[in-house]
Image (cartoon, rainbow, N blue to C red; front, side):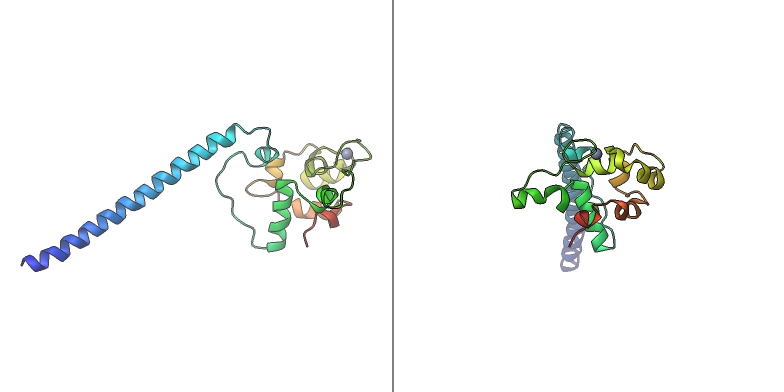
Amino acid sequence: MRKQTRPQNWRVLKVILLSLLTDFKKYTKVLFYAKWQRQWNTETDNKLHSVKPHVQPWPSLLNRKADTLLTRLRVGHTRYTHRHLLFGEQTPMCSECNCSMSVKHILSECPNFNSQRLKFFKTNSVDLSLLLGKTPHVNLFAFAPHLNRYDSVECD
Ligand SMILES: [Zn+2]
């Protein structure tokens, strides 16, 4: 009788310990996300903050090329906007606005793209978090080829 209850007790103990471990993992994950979010909330000058104000993970797109393009647009690092760093050239400037060219400028600020923004996003004032957020705007990839610099935005 005693030999039969001991393994039974071990199984129960094992289930309890695994349950506690699972709860502990969930608890620490929530704590770390909360700490990360508090830190991220202080970094409002970071250009990524306007695109992703919350630290929860976002799903990847099924199409690898589209996912890479979306990530480059989200972080604002495209071949066109950053190649000058590799080649020691001057920062590309917008001839219309006389400011340095950036993804944010192209997608949401430059009047050169107002008609394309109206056509694809139904507004010429685009919020980057809605355009490049967790669920990218449905017309984002339709808009991209209409940029004169699409080849420079596109990934290899
Ligand atoms: Zn411009």
